[in-house]
Length: 375
Image (cartoon, rainbow, N blue to C red; front, side, top):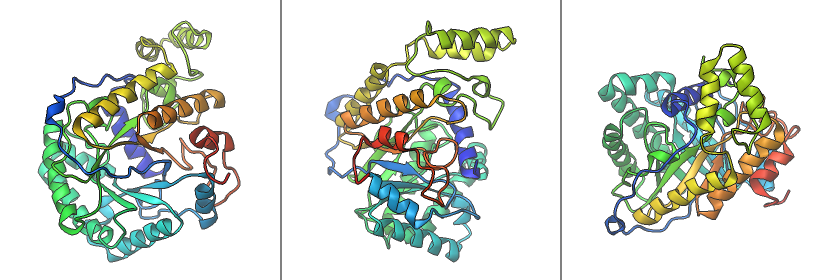
């Protein structure tokens, strides 16, 4: 897995505290909603880490991008490592501008996602002032590039999974928005709640004081299903396998997994499965989360999107994986929520390699697109 994937997964796992479900907090009074300009929300997207979030990043081949576009994908989310920009590297900025321009030429909208490196992630947690300054410097550099790109198809995303308390994040969010707005007055700003951008964290998070914004959440519930067999740390999720979706606590494969873990002395992993199956894993449970998200959007008159969701492909059965992906995507679409799948060709991926059109997972692509596009 690339460095960008690792840092994202670590922050997500820590913030989720290995929880699977989510309940949105009580919503503010609808009368407090601000009048906002209705904006097109990017959707039918795919995340493409491993390109601009590392110095040795690899671009996808143009035939791969063309096949994605022909299949029906419309949006690319590009994680960008701010550490590569804060030194003012003109070459890196030119590389990003050229890459985004090529994606626009092929018909994609692009989310320019400021994706903290492990170093910046640690700085934001340990020295908020210094970390905030680094993030602001990165956006000072990147906004000069975004300003040259079309505002109708390039979306600056202020900070992925902000690793801090909500009050600190709202302060930094306003600062980063001001930095971007100074050079990009017409681009739509994208932001998500802290600390993990979870769907349940947006309930009491107010929107920006800006008429051109999209709130973005991530969805990986239940993590015992979506992250089973993960490999990047010592989480009990790494020791969970063979869980299906949909499922209840009585599902035979679930009981077999719990019994096997307990027989091996792994009470932590067994208890995690039981905790996350307090609510059955069903399409209805997923749909209810997006109904709440739509209520937040309507209350605040602020468009929303889900710019990460996915299932790790290490040990899950293919049918369960497709079932979950289709259920989440359909719930988002039914509630006017744009989406971008995590990710293209790494642990959660849907193709074997970004350099070849061989190895596309047509069944996963069908679960995401249901035949939209040219096939």
